[in-house]
Image (tube, rainbow, N blue to C red):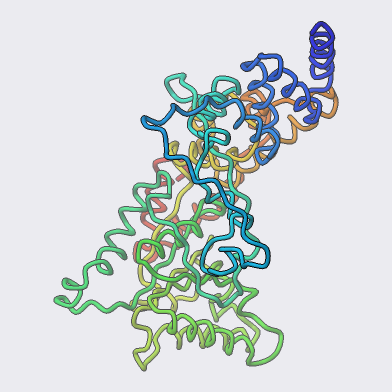
Length: 451
C-alpha cells in the first residue's frame, strides 16, 4: 500500500508539471479510484473531458464511479439453466431466424444491469460542474455552462441550386426587435393567415430587400424568415449567377427560379443584390444588362407560376440597385438591418465562444463595451482572444482557459469596421433620399449624432 501511495504522489507531481498530458491524468485517475480517492479522480476525469469531450476511457471510468442502483423490490425469477442441445440438433436461434442473437445484440439497446448500470448523465454533469470552472458569468454573478457545439456534418452540404430547410425561426435571432416587428407587419402576417389573405385578395408573391452595414446578420435573418414561413431556402450569390459565356447567366437565373417553383413554398435569397442587379445605367457590359433584364422577367413571371415563391435580397449598398428591381410588385418592401443591440451582442459573444475553452466570461460587460460593433467585429474579437490564450500557453507550456482578460485585451486592439459604411450612408441620407426611401436610415443617423 505504501508503494501505491508513493506512485500516486509521483503521478500527482508529474501531472502538475504536464497538465496537458491526458494519458498521464487518466493513469492517475485510475489509481486514485483504486485507492478510494473518488472526488480527486473525478476532478482529473473532468479535466480530461474538458480537453477531449469524446474520450471514451474517461467516460467509462465515470460510469464505474456511479452509485449502484437500488435493489429491486422483489427478486426476479431466476432464469432456467440452459440445457445443452443434443449433438446434431439445430440451436433455437438458428431454428427461429426471427429470434435475436444475443451475441449480435446491440449493447446500446440492452437494458441496464446491476453490473453495468445505465450512465446517469445528469449526475455526471453535476459532478463536473463542481470541478470545472464556469464558462460564462451571468449578470447577477452566477455561473452558467453551455454545451459544446456539435461538429458540422460534411454530408449536409447542399449544391448551389438545391433548396434546403433552414431549421431557424425568428426567435433564434437575438435582439433586433424593430426588425422583427417590421418583418411581421410587412411580410409574415399576410403569409400566415390564408383566410384573411384570400378575403383581401393578397397574393403569395412578394419581395423584401434587407439592407444595412456589412456583417450585421442579414443572411441569418433571411434564413429565419424562411423558417417562419415553413418554406425551403435557396441562397444565391453573384458567383452562382454570373458566367463568362454569353447567355449562361440568364440561363442560371431561369434555373434558380424553376427550382424554387418546384419546391414552393420556397424563399430565394439573393445575396449582394447590388452586384447581380446593378443599375443598368452604370453597366457598360451588354451581357450584364441582359442578366438584370432576365432577373426582372423572372420576378414578374407573367404566367403566374411564382405563387409560393418569396424573394428576399440583401445588400450593403441599396442605392446601387437598379430602380426597376425596387418598384412595386418586386422588391418593394425595404427593411434596414442595423448593428446588433446590446442583447444581440451578448448572444453573438456566446455563439462564438460556445465551442472554445473559456472560463469566467462576463458576457454582459463585453456587450456593454462593444456598442457600434458589427457581429463580424465581435467574431474577430473572440478569434483574437483565442490567439492570445494560445500564444500564452505555447510560451509558458501551461495550457489555460480563455478568460475575461483575454477578451478585454482583444477588444482594445479591435476597432469597429462600420465607419466607412456610415460615411457613405450619411451622404445618401442627406442628398439622395428621394421619396423618403431612406428615412429610417436618416433617423438612426440622427439618433447616433452622425447626421
